[in-house]
Image (cartoon, rainbow, N blue to C red; front, side, top):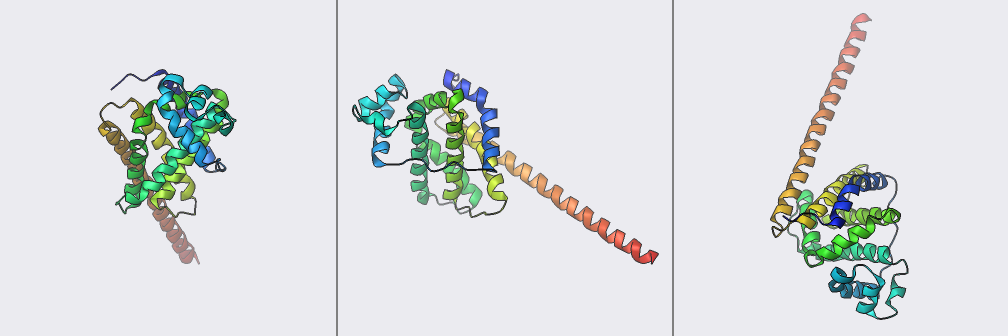
Amino acid sequence: MRIPGGAVFVAARLLPGIVEAAQRAAVTEFPGPIERSDARDDALSAMIPLIPRHGWSLAALRAAAGPDADLLFPGGAVEMVEAHSDLGDRRMEQAAGGITETKLSARVRALLLLRLEQSADEREAIRRGLSVLSLPGNRPAALRSLARTVDTVWHAAGDTASDMSWYSKRAILTGIYATTLLFWLRDSSGGEATEAFLDRRLAGVARFGRATGALRRGLAYAASRASTLSGGSRTSAS
C-alpha cells in the first residue's frame, strides 16, 4: 500500500470536521441543484487525462475543451471538482440497474463499490480534487459533494424512508463513504483491501444498530414493567 500523498494527507486531517459538518447538514438541509449540461460533462471527461500534469486548472480545461471552455465553470477549480463528483454520482445511478442484490443494505454496499470502481481511472483526478476541496474557502463545496453522493446512493438503492431514519441513514453513510474513499485512494491491492475495509465499517454499524436496538427494547420492557407494577400498587392501595 502506498504512503498517502499530500492531498490525501490533508483531506484525512480535515476529514473529521468535514464529516461532522456533513452529518449535521444531513439533518437540517440538503445541497441545492447543481448546473448540469452535456457540454460541462464532455469538458470534464476530456480533462481527466490532463489533470495529473496540470491539475484542476483553467489551463487544463482550455486544453481539453477549447479557449472559451472556462465559461462553463465560472467558479473555477472548485466548481469543476464539485461538478466532477456529481458526474460520478449520476454515472453510478445510471448503472445501478445492473445490481442484482435485493436487500437494501447489500445494494448500498454494491453501489459504494460501484462508485469507486467506475472512478478507477480517475484516481489522480479525485486525489487532486480533494486537495482543492480541502482549502478553507471550499469547505461548502466539499460538504455538498459528500452529501450529494450519499443521497444518490440511498436513492439508487431504492430507499423509501420518509421518517427520521432518512436523516440518520445519510449521516451514518457519510462517515462510511468518506473514510472508505480515503482508504481507496491509498489502496494498491486492486480493490480487495478497499472492499474488506468497507465491509468492516458496515459490520461495525450493523453491530451498533443491533446493540442500540436491544437497548431500546430493554428500556421499553423496563418502562412497561414499571407501569404495570405501578398500576398494581395503586389498585392494591385502593
